[in-house]
Amino acid sequence: MRIITGTAKGLKLKTPRGRDVRPTGDRVKESLFAILADRIPGAVVADIFAGTGNLGLEALSRGAAAAVFVDASADSIALVRANAALARLADRAEILRLDAAAAVSRFARAGRTFDLIFCDPPYNKGLAAAIVDKIDAAAIVRPGGALIIEHSRHEQLPADLVNLTVTRTERYGETLVSFLTNNT
Image (cartoon, rainbow, N blue to C red; front, side):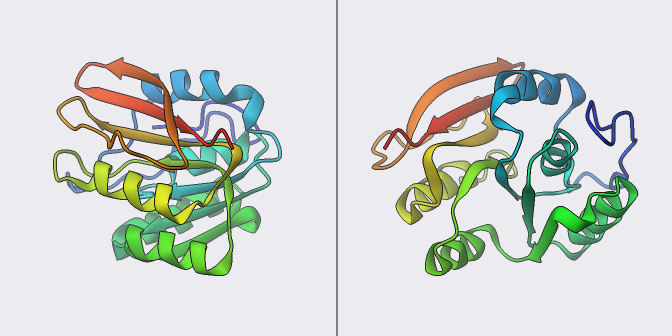
């Protein structure tokens, strides 16, 4: 797993040894960032269920202004810190060890919003639908911004959202990447 382009281009990121973290593969990440290319420079980004920090660090490398990384795992937080330092992007990274739902609530209470939110929860545990509902209700995606969620093709996202609309879904084998936009 590597940073594809930008200031940290080609950097190999540290990855976990076990199977608890499933980093987004380079092929999926390349496609995702090709779709988002014009939206990255200057963006304020959140990487929820950050794992290694792969998606948020790619955004920072490509010119995002700042990124907040959220994960409940101490091991994942250590990986994000190490990878941010390795990529020389730590100065624009805020790293929080929190449950994803608690982080979304904290952002909402503080009035924090984001241009882009990357979300890659563990598959087939009901977390994709739950976090989409939570982010939608919290209204933390800025107008014109997007939530990008990676999930199993066996998981359905909620259809009755208030602030977000599914505008695009890409399939990569068993993986779906859904783009939900705040069109307000």
